Length: 493
Image (cartoon, rainbow, N blue to C red; front, side, top):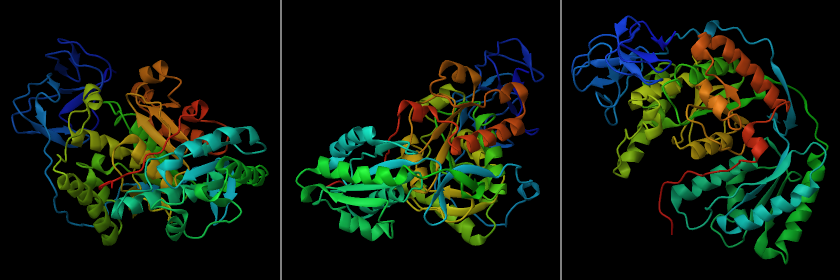
């Protein structure tokens, strides 16, 4: 088939391959060429009428759109408004309660303190301030020669913050670094301070809370004659401790998986995102945890998430999550609905509703079990919503900070980046997977041919358990593409 009509009530269909003017698809004769991933009208859509995709409005027609015409940014406008009010009507039945847990419910991981589990056994260097990034990077490079046993590598998380920040920005930096220091993928952590910074080790410890003194060490560069020599001595000890750690069978209920998309296209909401949604439902049914973020890409689909809140308290937190991000834009005089990006539009996404209705399919059908503020670490199981922006690296870092041991990243355009944790690139279309095999880990584009989302979702679940067990490495791990980016909202002194 060369098109898909996603739900029976849609008045547009999506071209699965490039279609030509004059040919007949989905019962209509096309009046113009339709690029792959783009939409065409199945009936006349009058000026002002809703354009329906995924069974919901994705905007309204700015002018009369004849049947068979290309439906895109030139004739459709968003229907979204600014901060709005919502009413709670109880949780809607999505069918999740009838799902059977998957057969395989263990992976081979590393047991950590506090009944947590890691899927990697790495040594992390966390600078308290950007002034010592180069020291951290030098230590990581020189300590690589010390790696032995089950240690997977030594990594430094450079960032430009930790000083000259005020209020909320300063606390967000501390919360982000604390989340990395506590992360279970690290078998040992060197917290590297300068000594005179706002976020000095003493101040960071107030936010950090209890740590394992054997596995988390602290070093102030200004207090030692040779910070490289002292740092390498600490790293030698940490590597020695972690080197004897062994993988063991651990219930999948200990898995926390972040979900993010970037460079979406017209196939994302048809293939990759619903494929991740099947995975999310499977993991949650087995007692595990998934985290959905990029709040601005919930705009237009937020009510579908709100209808999955089992309590009024969770509903209210979800409302605050959404409207809080809208107010953040308003505070700086910026448009709330600047999305979609140029690459999204080129791939067939027309409005933010179009993008959001596709993006939120990563959350599957499970109920919302928690709403996390930026930097907050997950403590409960099930599906969570996390406050973070749409920016790929900022959002991926936020997922890791909240405890995700790995991230499922769907993409229709492709990207090589990696976060502090294994970042699985899932292509929405097969040509991307074929063109960029050194970027893409898992091809969901085959769903466009088979139409079988459930089977590919189960294959993704099996893939993730193998990845978590150390049988596989992601492309970003293989290439050493790893970075962090901390969210900020304020002045720099």
